Image 1 (cartoon, rainbow, N blue to C red):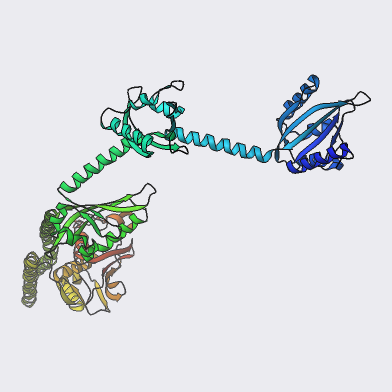
Image 2 (image 1 turned 30 degrees about the horizontal axis):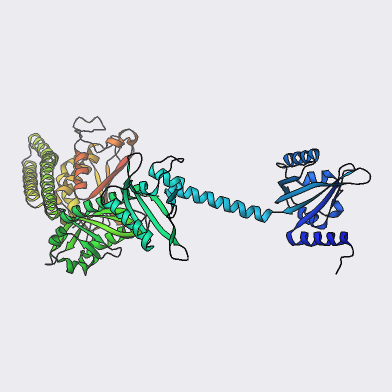
Length: 636
């Protein structure tokens, strides 16, 4: 069947081909700067025909800025030379995406007006270009990986006895890229002996039996360096079963072998240290089970290895010590710590308890995953015994020191108490002696003599109490008794009777508590000092008034002595109020010992003392005994 219109046929064929391969056809009239595109061209360039002005500039503006100069220059060069225009460039579509275009053009004709018409085709090769770029990138990555891993390749053709090495394989052999060696010479690089014999046999079996091989062998490269290589070989046969080519992989594994050797040596050293260690060692599972105990640990705990492997450290740990170690182990498992150390007690097979110093370290994988534990267990039982003995010796030494301190304090207190407590009775005797000497009346002298007799008895009683208190304190510690408060205060007033009468002092009681638990000698000395000071430092322009008060609250039992005497400037003297040899008035008989003694005695009975005072108004000294389980005063 004949084709009626060859032009229409050609156009139809061109259109069909263009649709099949995404090929756009264009024509350009150079004299009139008129560019004509078919439908495929508009689709390739992602241009709306309505926006197309059919000029060379329309195409120029669509080319990628980085390619437009060279693409235009190549087009102009082909026009000048009447040559074929073949060029690949990039364009930016309406979404600013890059497309790769392959262009081909040729001056096809000159029209009747003498105008040159260029006809060409454009093809969108973006998909092909991307695939090619990805393949090139993949190949480059593969080459980089091979260079990094030192993996090369080789080929050998038995029929022609030609061997081929890639660049990396040559580098491993110590050869330059341009150097070439035959297969027979390549074999000689393997170390003489086992290594060379092994590769000769393997290569022979590959050629004769098509048996593949994968070997790790030492060799000496062209630079004289001893290296380790991994060589892999396989054979390709023809239809007759004849080997036509052998090929394989060639890798430098020297560094791998070095690390492997170091690891083996490290493991050997660890095993030697583990097996022959003087202290117990063990590998333990993460749950505490024994995995591998050494001989020293087996001997230390008395179990056989079989028995230990059926137990865990939890079952052999004294219950009181377990919680601390479990907490430390959990921190290790959580990655908060890498190791821990503690003193603990194990239960031996015979049931006895053994003090050990335990060091535990976590072993982790390269991915930081917990694998197992290494435990070092040192017998410190003797050290713990010595520590207990030292603690006991220190305790006894402290007791002895405290006893000496107490005895020394008791002697000092005794001297001060004797000085102060005897002063009042002696003063009474001196006053009575003066009265006795100044009176002529026989009846009065008899009465004074009786008073002297009572004062003498009081003096003897005071001395006896002081001596007895010192003896008791030295033998058994402080003698604490339940004391009746009114009886205690009455007894002190009786001893101060002559001073009270001679100074016209008025003493009142407000005792809301009947009794307290205290040392009788100290309490008497305290009251004699406080009441005596109130009399000694009375205000010269008014009658001395003293109030002895006792009450209790949640803080304890309170005992106070208040007066309306001279008072003390606490802003000036407050810090040294209870200091030794501190005086606050100009009395000739003030020696600064009394308040120091009072404070010492109160604190010896677990009490405290405070003072409130204002000059020319008076003072209040308050003693507080903290509450005990049964009564007031010193705890049991």
